[in-house]
Image 1 (tube, rainbow, N blue to C red):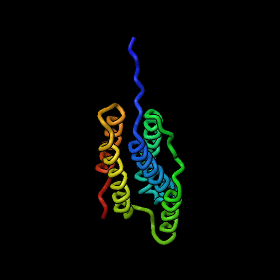
Image 2: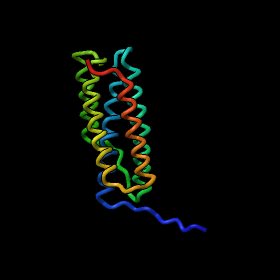
Image 3: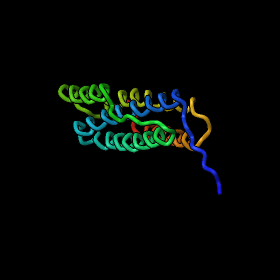
Length: 148
């Protein structure tokens, strides 16, 4: 019989993973609001990003749990600010393809948090999972039209 050794992360690793989860939760909240306010021809793009971030939040939280941490999915103040920014913008202009620059900027921050997490984790299935999630986000970004 194989003895299974638990994998525990260091406090720094857990903090870095929590930062990634928090950024992903905040970005998901932004896309959730964007989906509600989006013009019909742009809504499908917001839905794709919202869905990806929702799924990845679950996977990142599961990784934190597996590594001995307790994930916080509250989103905090930045999630509320992200939602409010979309609501305010929708009052003055359409939520449409012009949002692609803002999306690219927001996703660049998420990708930077993925890079930080990847750089602090050693080889493991958890690191592989994060690498896969980053690849999914990069792929989705490459499939969408560039900012005007």
